[in-house]
Amino acid sequence: MVDLGSRDLTDEQGVGAQFDGLAHLAIDPGHRHQVRGRSRSRSTRPPAATRPGPLSCRGVVSRPRPGIVGVMETIVIFHAHPDDEVIVTGGTIAKASDAGHRVVLVVATNGDHGDVPDDLGPNETLIDRRRAETDRSAAILGIHHVVWLGYGDSGMTGWEQNDLAESFWKADVDDAARRLATILDAEDATTLVVYDWHGVYGHPDHIKVHRVGHRAREIAGTPRLLEATMNRDAMSEFAAEMGEADFDPNGPADDGNPFGTPAAELNYAVDVTEYVPRKRAALSCHASQISDAGEMLQMPENVFARAFGTEYFIEPAHPLGEHLDWLFADELAV
Image (cartoon, rainbow, N blue to C red; front, side):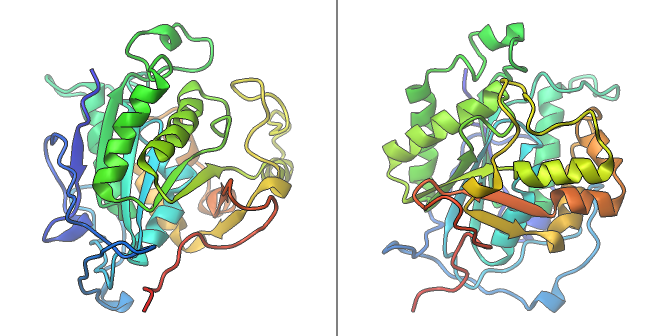
């Protein structure tokens, strides 16, 4: 039942091109790089000043794929649902892509328990819509390739969908990990990004991403693993500033644990303020999801920037509290 459908967003016009239809698995193993002794390909990159400006999620995305001086890392970002790529990792994805790294998005589920829009076409399903929205979001963020594992959305903790045979939550960890490891191997990935131990806020599919991702990294021998999370202390400060008395990040989230991770346990705080407009534009591509994306997009721009202008990561191999500001080497080794 897992379809491993995929879309390569690298073409002659770059990531800025719009695509129709859904492709089958077509991982391109030709994109190689030199990190820790591996081979790499090269292409050219135009100066930043030549890159066009305003972003849009209507029609062709106005931002083309930046050229590449050298593909220094291949970063696989593993997320649970369509639209998850934006909030906790969207700025980091865009920054890494602009720096010349290859970014691959793997989505575990189809997001089939999301909001169903009123304007679906006669033969269009919610899954079709959410995949198309993800393609447009990926184009804005600079993602080069999107792969779908095709599991069913498990719903929130305690929902009956948790126990459906096709749900990601019910999937065998080793089986799902082998599927992800196949992608890691084919992409020659140097870094895998998953969620923290409780999936940031306890959603069953997010927790499963953590477990499957760690196991896949072991199987594939991927050199590096990072865990995306949110800064619980910063969230508390933000809630206090906004007067959100009903939201306490230290209180129980979906699985009964608090939101995110305390600041003292983080390794990276990535300033993505420059990329907030692209995050917001990418989020707007997920227009069908009015109860999540729609609510966040109602935030004034300055409030959205305050909430989502920094992205946080844990690197289990590093000491706790070693706060660094960037994740990847952006210059090729000589």
